View (tube, rainbow, N blue to C red):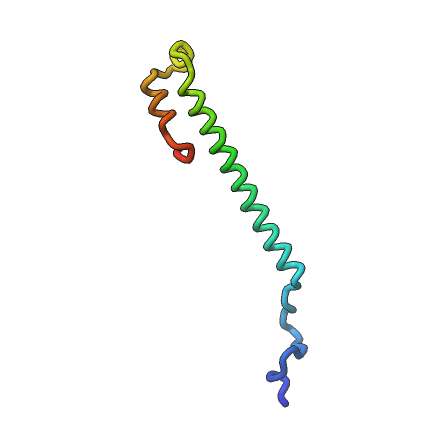
Length: 84
């Protein structure tokens, strides 16, 4: 039997396959990075929703102090939280 046909034979000069532990670590690192981005996105969405909810109930004098009209505040408050 020739050496090239054997499965699992030692072949000098070739890289050994990555260990299962290294592959799991890479997958976990990827999940953590994506999870961090997702949590930042949720944080931004919550902030927008709260700000827009507050704009609905602010009195006119506070809106004037912020440089907004009631119509502009109503337009901003009507936007969904995922729209910037």
